[in-house]
Length: 46
Image 1 (cartoon, rainbow, N blue to C red):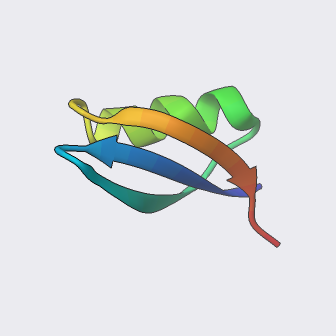
Image 2: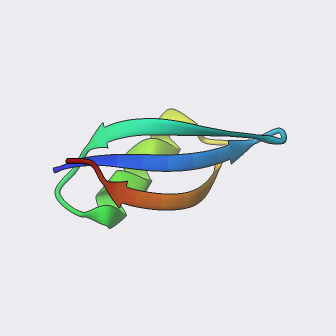
């Protein structure tokens, strides 16, 4: 499924779109791309 992960880095919030099997994998993929980020939310994108 396609997920939008909202990340927070250095006072800014941005969205990373990833393809993953579930929400936990989406979180892991987004953090692998942005290792210094903090995950705010993970939502399914339709």
